[in-house]
Amino acid sequence: MSENINPSENSTQKSLNFIEQIVVEDLAKGKNDGRLQTRFPPEPNGYLHIGHAKAICMDFGIAQKFGGVCNLRLDDTNPQKEDTEYVEAIKEDIQWLGFKWGNIYHASDYFQQLWDFAVSLIKQGKAYIDEQTSEEIAQQKGTPTQPGTDSPFRNRPIEESLALFEKMNSGEVPEGAMVLRAKIDMSSPNMHFRDPIIYRVINKEHHITGNKWKAYPMYDFAHGQSDFFEGVTHSICTLEFVPHRPLYDYFIDELKEGKDLEDHRPRQYEFNRLNLTHTLMSKRKLLALVEEGLVDGWDDPRMPTICGLRRRGYSPEAIRKFVDMIGYTKIEAINEYSMLEAAAREDLNARALRVSAVLDPVKLIITNYPEGQTEEMETINNPENENDGTHTITFSRELWMERADFMEDAPKKFFRMVPGKEVRLKSAYIVKCTGCKKDENGNVVEVYAEYDPQSKSGMEGANRKVKGTLHWVSANHCVKAEVRLYNPLFTVENPAADERDFRELLNPESLQVLKECYVEPFAVKNDTGNRYLQFQRTGYFTLDSHSTTEAPVFNRTVNLKDSFAKK
Ligand code: ATP
Ligand code: MG
Image 1 (cartoon, rainbow, N blue to C red):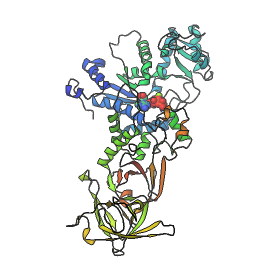
Image 2 (cartoon, rainbow, N blue to C red):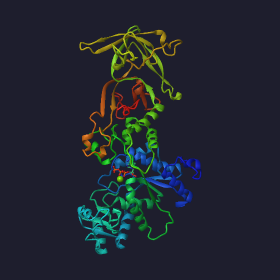
Image 3 (cartoon, protein in one colour):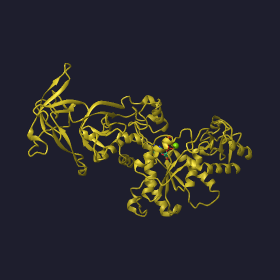
């Protein structure tokens, strides 16, 4: 599967991003014996989102591109929030995006090795048990310009720390009563070196190791070491970990115990996180939306999660295209949601099957068409791809058309259904509108037209000039469906930066449900295996994965044109 690119080939060099360039140089120098190994390290405490997709495309993509391997590592060092449900969802989403891992590892695979390493640091006087509260420890940290203060426990006897560390893991010590800290430098300009906490007590069952451990390593004490144990060469993460990098290197230096690795060691590289307007990427907040019932689960089509986008009707290719469009840099920024939509539109234009669906129906009666007669009209599935073939749609006397496509008194440029004017019914006939019927409130309840039998699409000479072409479905040959239209989940551009609670920023109009829509049967059941649809003239849609044959529901993926740009 992996496509090898010769690192010395200059022609490919130009289009490489800065991390790819580093990889190419390292491979050329023969670092790590010419091996390339990356990892994607999610914490299984939530579902993956579009930001993770950016990291996945980097971690897996770079390994694939340069003949390396990317492993999946579940960063399960905090049993409080982690769950196997999330592990399964993470695996599904990575595969759906089109990537394959080499192995699956867990940070918990290394709990024993990490414990042993911590014990060895204590024995060397390089770690100690601190019995202060987290507030006290925080107060002593100092500021970047002011040195911190030593903990009163900093110089306690090694034996005491060893005994207490055992106790931390025995279940006797309540959470927060003590922590293990690395003894490094309380006046380091890098705050992460001011005796970082490396172990804490969590009295909760772990989804894999059960009750074996009560003392759990912190991220900084687990991540780099896990990379080292696995033989990761390039540990790629996001920019907020830049200040952690010296500590990452420090623990690996301690771990190698004086051995000269000759640069056979993992190195951390950072790129900019993905931030998107009108949405959030924090798993904690996304979880709150789910738990508080503010959305319809992790896969609510308004969610920025991979499963939400999938349910919404995004293809994996659209997501990868988007990641490609935004690229990788070293500068934090926020990307427009409309870019994600543009990627979807471009992808769906090439892939979607064109179908007829009427979202706001009004009856159209072709008064001169024989009652009881029907015709099967052939329509092209996808003008962008001949191989997608054709299907037929039934034409008859009674049709549904869009309410907005009729006007009694229309302005000149309204090339739709207007009394006395002609329009083409897509894939069928040219009809001339003859009037309408209204109820007592003046609402149009039926529109009338006469068809020209000589104007059938594809007929010799049928193509006389009519300006408008309208979509329709046959009233007795269609399926009633619910259609859900989506708008941005948040009203403000950057809810993460807003001082108000994110719940207050939810868009009350993020979901609009149309209960009575009519779609041609092909939209509900087509045998092509293609789930991506374009409702002609309306937008891109897909059948909701929770919908049933009896009560079909469609989600609008994206409309045909950019609506953000108009505002
Ligand atoms: P949260 O803080 O919301 O829990 P996280 O960043 O800690 O999210 P992880 O599961 O630890 O989530 O992330 C796994 C990998 O995905 C990490 O390497 C992380 O850098 C990357 N990642 C997470 N969010 C983004 C994002 N918005 N853009 C790019 N990469 C991301
Ligand atoms: Mg994390």
